[in-house]
Each structure stands twice: as C-alpha cells, then as structure tokens.
Image (cartoon, rainbow, N blue to C red; front, side):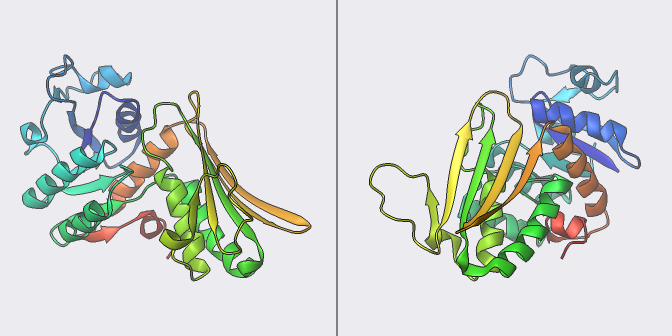
Length: 266
C-alpha cells in the first residue's frame, strides 16, 4: 500500500516516515510540506534520517494525487479538513491523528466517511487505547463514589488544551457513568471555587519542556486512590500505531473508525 505523509518536515511527520519505512506491506510514496517551504524537492527519507527513498517533498497534496492510496495526517484542524475533502473526492483513504477538531469539523468528518474510509483517533498509541478499555471497566465498577480527575502534561509547543487524549479519557469515563462530559467537565480551578461537586470530572493541564505526552486518570475517595497512567517517551509510539491503523484501514471500503476498531477492542 502506498502511503503519503502530511507535514513531513515536522517532528511527527519525520517519525511517521520512519515508521512507514520499518513496517511491512506499506511504502512511502508521497510526502507533503508547507507551501513555500525551502525543503520542496528534497528527499523525504534523507530529511527523516532514514536514507534516500527517492520520494521528493511536495507542497500540495494535489501534486501527489496519483502517487498514494492512503494519507496519514497529524497536522492542524484546518489543513486536515482540506485534506479530508481531497481524499473523499479522489477515493483516497485517510488516517487522522490531528487533535483540536471542533464539533462542526467532527461532523464533517463523519459525512466524508460515507465516501471513503476514515480512521480518526486523538491518540494512536496502542497502550493508550488499552487504557481506554480499562478505564471503562474501572469507572463502571467504582461508580459515583469516587472523585475523578484527568491530568495531562505535554511539551511547551502544543497548541490545544486539554489534549485530545485527555478529552477522550474524560469521555470514556463519563460514558461509563452515564454522564455528559460537556455538562460535568471542569477545566482548571482558581480562587474560591467552593467544594467539589460529586459528579464533576476535572481536567488539569501542564505545558512544559519536551514532554511527549503523559496522561493520568485519578479516582479518589476517602481512604484510597487509584491512578491509571500512560507515559509516552517517543513519538514513534504514535507513528507506529498510525501505520498499524493504515494497514487495517486498507481493507475497509468506507466508514469512520478509530483505534478501538483497529485493535479489536469493541
């Protein structure tokens, strides 16, 4: 299967190129950078440090229209939506790891999935997705007697907050407890906030240094605490998960899927 990588000059893009090169049954056939980039025309493999691949960087996805079957996109919401439209119009499949999508953008994604196969997940890590499954069991078992907080840490360059993974962790817990996260979420606390309400789910965000991604869900009650934590030390964990998702998605004609589908955790 021929794979294109969007944002190939970025940290995640380079990790994706490396992961594609390490995987079996797929090959890098296109790589896209920002319009006007001085890197246009350079070899994608040399840029990513994996050796020459004879895949030249282009500045528009349309420049590689005939060169790929599936796109992997970890860029920005606006760029991803444009690429999604392109893929839907031209019969290309797409794996999306972009976070910070609005409700309207998420709805548009679902519409495009009627035309092509779309895999969208806020976190492609196999370990995080196992945590999603575990959290559902833990939350249902503990019920409403435990206070719940989601704490996440990322590098100083991350632009959305809370992270897409943190929000998904909150959604998993809220769904398991029959709550609506939009109604029970509390994002940060300051000043005289009063006592914590029983059914709120709190979010704390830390941005510092070069942390790839740490997430903890804390369940606490009188006398005990349970913490479920995932720590990512390399972007390769997300890149490898994305390539695994791409291989799985190749067999799907159309529809919207996530990593729970890929890993058989439904």
